[in-house]
Length: 204
Image: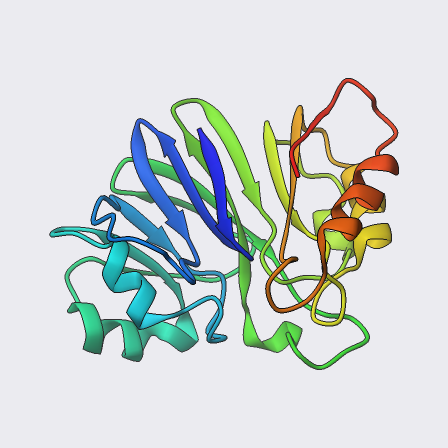
């Protein structure tokens, strides 16, 4: 089961409970086995919201620029540092990191080594794109579920996101990064209309 809680805040329950970039969490869950962070912006790394989902022995997966902050907040024992374009085994969970950056805007520079993730949970591959444009490195991703930003301004817009979605081999596609800071439901509706493969499930 996958749920977009708000913006780019994602909860996956598939054997383990996995959160990605918890933000604007509206209740105390305290059930996270893993929390993944794509980068350090406030709407992706929010200590207040992390506090609502973490529990004892939660594993935190962070980019290099978040290492010091994460260790200060959560201790060093359960912190895993990642960079793009690598494969990891994180406490039994298979994880591949993908590139996530802007090409023609300055919000998410490639040199920051921020990431997206392909998380293999219970045999199902979830691709979480992170804050990215439709870059060359992510054109041929294969996954079961793809979560792709559509809001524009800081990431690809709905048209660019649809172009990516039409390349990715996924059976389910879920747009993210809209409805809170940028983008709106109309963008999601337009995105869905541009998906060429009609058998793909689109949840907006």
